[in-house]
Length: 210
Image (tube, rainbow, N blue to C red; front, side):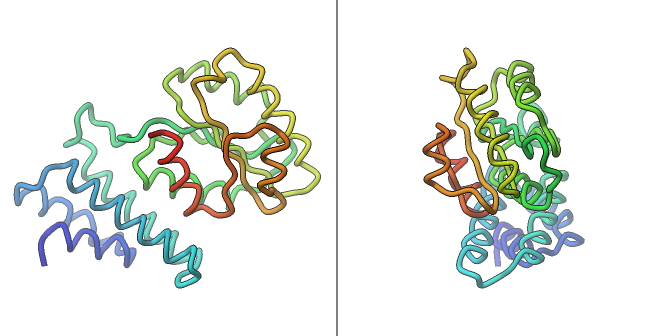
């Protein structure tokens, strides 16, 4: 098994304690840092597919994402500019009035694992805070909104309206998700994309940022 294959297997199996050493060995062996990162991103893509197909569940996905994080820590100094964000920046948050963060955190981890830098605004985020965050990070490509309650769907609608009215709207894509959210609702409020789970969100983010 090549060093890169080993890295891939350790990610899919979620071996956070072993991944750091394997990444270092791959680098010592002459593998390019970007190649190692691509291998890890692909491995997380496999994990995402398994999750979508109900072959694995949230706990397995979390341990894989944790392993990914540990691998990236070893890799970061070797990537140009010390940054592991090859795909761009994503702002993510749960909308005003909603305190749920498990789904959002999972999406953040999967998007990060797909090579993005994630700016997580947390929960109960008012619309103007999303706008402020985009202004502070003009290179952001995607804004992700999460709502887990039917009662906070109006807050999501309001947030999308505020973002749609902003002067930077042409340079960002707005993604929405959460238990009560549907494709129809996303279309109705003027979002660019809706995804049903964290793995699809990571996939969609890659498409939108391309």
